Length: 401
Image (cartoon, rainbow, N blue to C red; front, side, top):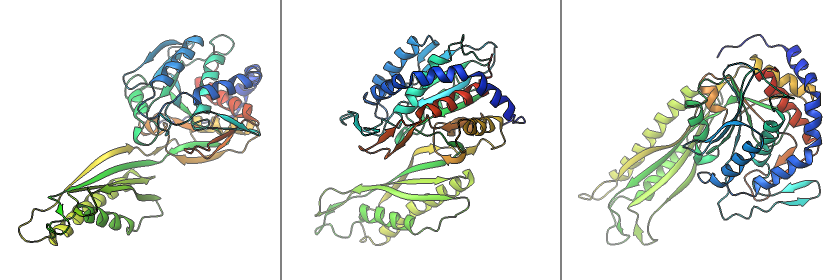
């Protein structure tokens, strides 16, 4: 990743030049909020984002974007051409939510707060991305670099950043820079990518009646043994690493020796090397738990087999704090009267960062909380500040024409 010397003067100049655009966006604050409410009430569980994606595609058409497409993984992409033939600056906001399709998505008002599943994550990011797509119209606000607006699929949980991985492996592989809009906020600048790997360990064996077949190996005992071994591991504080069993299950009935069992493990670290090492440890634990259970089985009974499957992988990385994109975000944050907070998280920005493309994730204004719960909320007090910050950051990267 090549960094040029950052210039706070450039960002300050861009911010001043965008004063009229900031005012227009502030005047549209109520309309942005209505968009946020509308999109939050369109169901979009991970893997089932089509309806919300179709709605976003229509809004891209309304904004006059070009080269609009829905790709093979469901990403919705639109482009605002730049004055020059240069690699694009990419704005991403993820379509998916963690909530099942039958969730009541009604948004209600509670004093200054809007409350409803997904109203913040990522109803806010999508609404502000659409507002920027309209404001950066190529006439009143024009850029040297093209800007691509991407509503991504599969950002949450088991989605494993599916949309971002596909986009940056194909259409976006030569991107100049990327800014992800994710939820609320106007201070955090996520420039460090938290990596993760997820595994499903499965045990299978003969099973049988809890009395008549006693002595055959027990798949649940093996899974529980593996979970216990995982829980007893000593993890490094530097680089910070976490490891937990998120789900475990198996068995047929209380009076049966289980013929199958499984557990799922979430591993996270700021270091790819540490992820590699802990992955090897997890494989060793999975095998050892099967061997220990097999060693206890009755003579002549068939042993357990074990399988370890990767069910998720998010890469690590960092856009250096001294890079011009991060410096522009720091200065833009100060220019709207906020204190910059450089941060680490797992977002769509993980993907371009891991490929050497400068990338950050930021909030899209306002305040939010209780994400991934039915009590999720968004407070739009001073929400226009975050919208103005986002526009300044994007146009600093894309360069005003």
